[in-house]
Image (cartoon, rainbow, N blue to C red; front, top):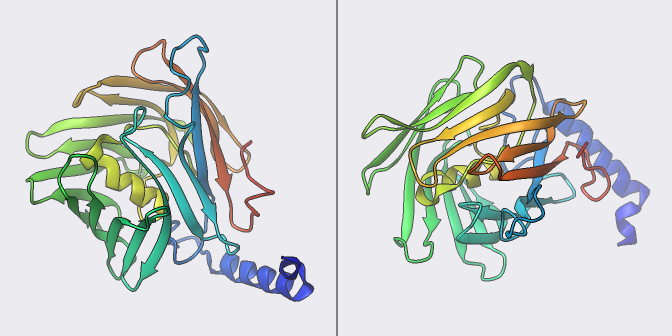
Length: 293
């Protein structure tokens, strides 16, 4: 372990960091995925707890974290723990990243079973995913992804089951709503405070097995950029039980423009959840410099 701190090793790390920072240009894709470090800060963990300690639930999650990640010494994503379909998740996984050619994988760290297979196009964007069997559901969820000229995800589909979904954005690039194409219904709609631009936030939106699950994974893995550019203040779901009109309040934004904490209403106005997000930035040692506030 002492070899990690030799002058030669230190010089190598600093040189690699300088190359990374020099390579991050204004127009670079901010989420290059596990193959190379992110040019922006990455949400390393999101945890939440009830503000009302008399609530009989000890936490809005079975475990306190919605997700948490680790990185290798070069700052690349290494492992990912995710609670899916919060706040009462039916699928939890600690997974490790793997990448071979134009495919990326999440492997269960205990069983080494493949949790998710991702097919990537020439620009490193996911075009197909196969998600492992969840409980008593179908053996696989297979989805396909479509993009516009800005590399924004505009539609995805489960063609086997005939489910198609569209994404609508504002001119700032913020996601406004998910649309269920078959009926034209709005699934989830978002409202932003355009007077408050941000660089990043990890907002709590329910996972919905087989609908948003893959999007969550791909976002946490670094293959989909769904990060808003302005402060989110409201998310409304009138599409699927349990419905919610979720308000995001008391938001703290650090000097770098990243949301580090906020309070939100879970399903009822009296169910208040306090959250904390830890950010991992290029060049950070995750054990020393975590930008939480």
